[in-house]
Length: 356
Image (cartoon, rainbow, N blue to C red; front, top):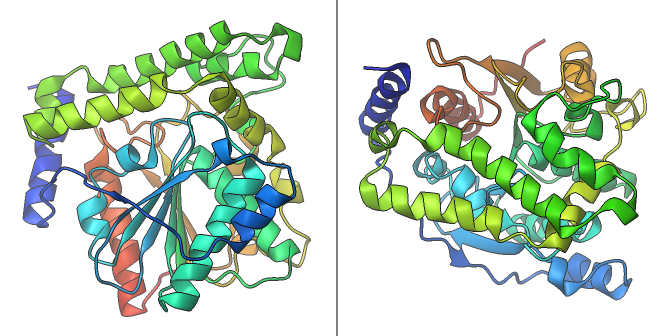
């Protein structure tokens, strides 16, 4: 039995023994009752309706609902597919799936403003914001804007998995030629506009598809985590989200990454990024396929975590014989699950551990 199959068997046991049998995801479209920030952003003329994220929800009882901000691809619904059953124990799960026809950082932050307000004010629930890769940068930007507006961050916690919070995390300016597949996919988007073309999008789609298929190629391993119907549903969702991106959708997502500021600009010396709520930051043991060796975000979190996130804890997720890859919440689900499950358990019991 190879390493992937062994890990899949372990993951299957974790799922079954913890009572989290994977079931097909059936999120429903969510129509927000609060739209003030979204409407204001559209009225200002800096964003368009085509850039609105789609909000989906799987409704469950509980005081700590989860808002999921995914990475570049695939959609949020696919990225936490195997974690959903555990997340449901704390409340509903809201997925923000970025538009395939465009992206606006201002509009996304406005939609997040509205959703958090609706949950906290109308439903008396304090959500956890769960982010993956690029979603971590979106969260940091939203927190910065919230603080700049002198508003309190009304969330119960935050999770950042393999955060990409500035361009330097994935593109090393000292490298003449990109060293990773991710860097090769993203670098052309930062070339002069006259060099951009639809072929750039097609190449990046091919690269992201290749990266995903590298983990999905062993169908026997996937069968240890999902049944055949779930696999087909999941794989189809991932491929649709990658190949469905149009020119504007892809380029505007990358442009948003270019708007993220470096960690030394995240906050004033006496201000934290998130002081009001516990934060769990999880890096994979093998981030080198995506993150640069001198990732500014990772360096800042390693050296200045207590100031940036006073209630924060940063851990490295390891996988033994099969090294855990960047944001690998599907293929290394069983390694991430204990960390995430414990964070939610501590929220529910009010006993949150903080690393000094």
